[in-house]
Image (cartoon, rainbow, N blue to C red; front, side, top):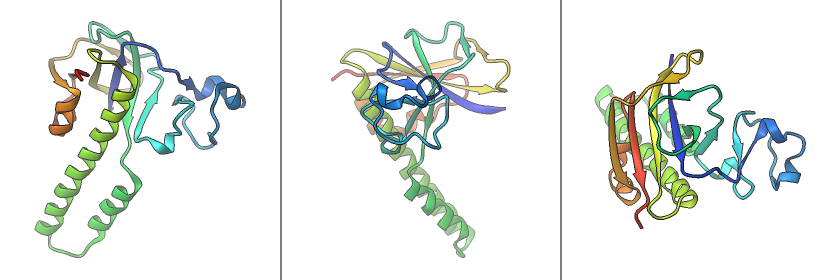
Length: 183
């Protein structure tokens, strides 16, 4: 089993599944190399996946019962920037006492969380209008039975407040966060 996040938007993206356009990327306005990317990943004509830490994938066979108000649902991955991943490895290899290592890991975790939230907020800001919202739902999945029921807990936050309270994105499983663009 693994943890998965899904995100819903009020309208469809101007994006294309790599599996649907492979070999014809230029016809769809994709001007960057798509080698090495997941086939279930959405590609955006104006942004290479290397320019964003937000990865949107096909929701595949996932079914949602009373989970989302928005009808366009996607899988969501939030990637850690490579320099922060390197720093994480350096801290793990470092020869300091456990207390110092733990403190450094916690500090880096907070920096990573802030970076990921900042990337997601930029992505959301670009793809919704004022008074629209997205919904992020965290679930456990066995990747075989992908039928999800209503969240156990829900929270709403403005997009601007999410930047000030990045821990709000640290959802427990079966919880949903609605993010509203109010400015």
